[in-house]
Length: 147
Image (cartoon, one colour):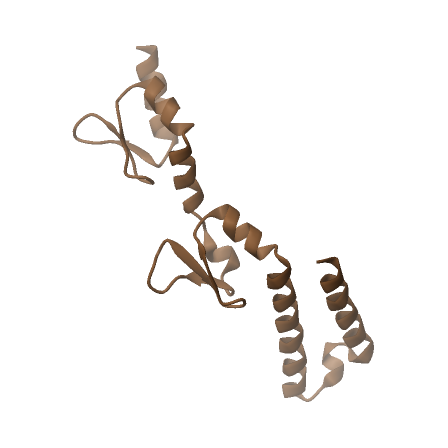
């Protein structure tokens, strides 16, 4: 009886699991059905298969302007800066976004955008003048040297 209440608490606290019409526990991440047993449930939650399912559920909106969902395959994301396709895993996306190539291209695009924005407005001093330009270029060069 204590196992039943603990299992019910686990199911209520985890949004990925629900009971199906056959009395089994269904995982919405992986599509797996598990026997209605506390020990089986704990074993599945600690399994590699479930952890991979959790890793695939990545919120790519925090990388919104640069990473978009792949056009044809929903298991992949596409980087608009580096023009690379990568698997939709949290570790893969984090590694890519902290990589040297991504950071250098991101920094150069930002600098180009700011210079062009100031040039369109007709005021070069709007960005901070020549001193700020030198500081930004020095910071970009330091970033390249670190990587």
